Length: 154
Image 1 (cartoon, rainbow, N blue to C red):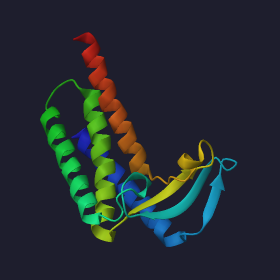
Image 2: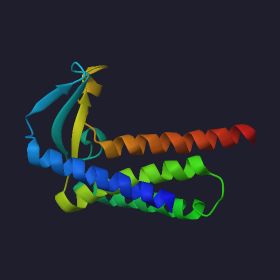
Image 3: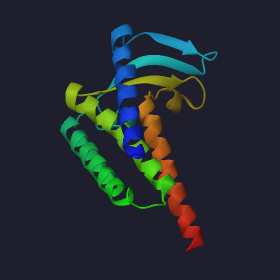
Image 4: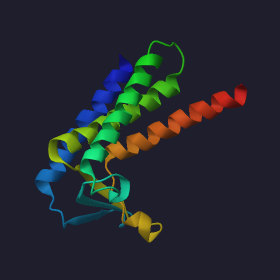
């Protein structure tokens, strides 16, 4: 039950933040924070990371929904297991972040992103993220960590 609550918390937190960004920010507006290292700016992403495949919105929605279905299926499989806490946490992060972004894609046709960084390579600085993206990255990391940790003991 705890892991389902995590998914819901990620989804509803992002729902609120994205709605707030949509109401109070314009697409051109940028608000630097932390001496310009973090930048709040609203961006509509019609594709995948870095706006790749923006010309194929139906394919992006299909792949996104398929990946979320797979993650949810694996999560349902591992939930009853007593151990595997890091895997369940990682899959919950993936599901919550993925569900949030899929909801945007299905309802609006794009994902609302709102955080970029003012450091690192220029290519990195051009990317715009949202909280759901960070949960997806963290979920991938936790699942990979669990896999390689397990592999090391096999």
